[in-house]
Image 1 (cartoon, helix red, strand yellow):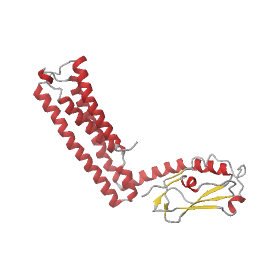
Image 2 (cartoon, rainbow, N blue to C red; image 1 turned 180 degrees about the vertical axis):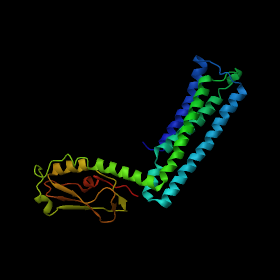
Image 3 (cartoon, rainbow, N blue to C red; image 1 turned 90 degrees about the horizontal axis):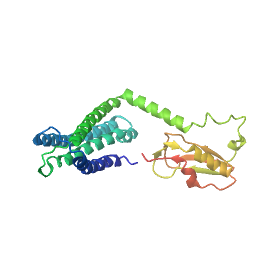
Image 4 (cartoon, rainbow, N blue to C red; image 1 turned 120 degrees about the horizontal axis):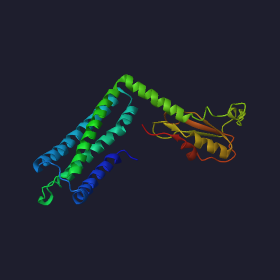
Length: 261
């Protein structure tokens, strides 16, 4: 799911809840909160206006993180920090709290009945506490911008990628029992695929897909790049030898995930 949809879904949930829950509450659970109408309106108005200021703080933290990483660290880390899911979920909770507070405010002293919704006001208070917790988590994220923490995160992420990419290597049969003929690797290669287009970086190798194609064509596929390599024009990606059936270059190229930097 696209990350920009996360705040949108939170906002939609807040709007829908503000239209449905207070209506159900007034009909089936008409319990009046022991609070004056003016105090309830001031409380909900303060929460709604404060959420807008809090959302501005979140955007400021996001911009600082992106700018700091663009200057100090590699540009590759900018996208990594900018796509932090905690940032988008925090924005979503702030917007949902804002919309639900406004919706609840409309049901205070509805039609002059002098009733303050009990459940909705308690829910607004709970969402406000959740917003404060998420804000503290965002502030704590700034600690991860220190060079020692960045190196640790990069190391952990790199080990995860290595384990995920080469998971089947340790489980593969030994050379003695392998069905691959070593002489096939030393022979001439019938097909060589090179990168064409703007520079990009290899982020993942679809080993299962390449193995499937090699078995179908009864050939040997040698990958000449690794995860993290920067691909320039005419950089060799992989080679194919002794193919009994024709392999599509486009299908082979899909085995390497190469996003643009």
